[in-house]
Amino acid sequence: MRSPDLATGLAVAALAVATTAWAQQYPLRAKYPKLQPISTEQLAHAIGSAAVVDVRSEFEYGVMHIDGASHVDVTEKDFIEKLTKATAGKKAKELITYCNGTTCEKSYEAAQAAQKAGFSQVRVYDAGILEWARMARGRTLLFGKPIQPEQIIPESRFQAHLADAAVFEKGAAETSAMLLDIRDAQQRDRTPEFARKAESISVDKLVPQLATPAFHARSRGKTLYIFDNVGKQVRWLQYALEADGYSSYVFLKDGMTAFVAGHPGCCTP
Image 1 (tube, rainbow, N blue to C red):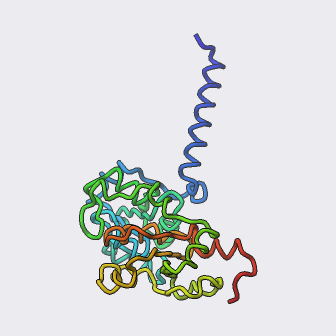
Image 2 (tube, one colour):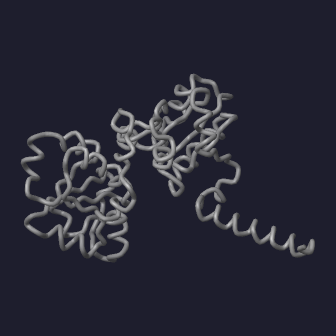
């Protein structure tokens, strides 16, 4: 029989391990201790009664979102006004925000802003949309239609299309490359020399073109080299590329911001 001291010690050690694992899995929770998270199972039960709000960009929402979720971009200046409309002005209604996953801060920022604006029952689904898609299949929409299990792009396939700065720059210089800058206009203040030949087109304008015969003709026989600002938008662009039959494409790992940071003096404003 274990002594009381030994049993207590083991319990404390187990709790410490669990706490460490939790902190690693949800690294932003400690930054927002006043916000209450909600699990996938709890969210599944809350849908229908709570107001579930996707606070990402319109492009990301259009690619994949929780069936029944409203869309209110947290970066919009009138976010609270739109959020109030999404909840029919009922600030006592349970409100659940979500974005891309455990390292996506938008869901926390949105929930914090909602609390400050007087919403009294705010929770954060910080596991994010991909975890929901994996765990609650049939209740996730991909391009407006229920997602099928095989349509969820695994992390390994996304990683396979990423290239570090040196590899990306070299590949983009090849004659068989089609270089695309999908950053927003305000993000193009610093661009290295090799990327100045890129076709600049925001991701929300690129996606509709992918299915057109004209774009297929221009890209035939070429590898698409695509970079965004911080490496987040390409994760969702991949769904559009594969849905429209593109298989030869490369993304700049961590986006142009990381490239510029790693190459001091490479760019002029």
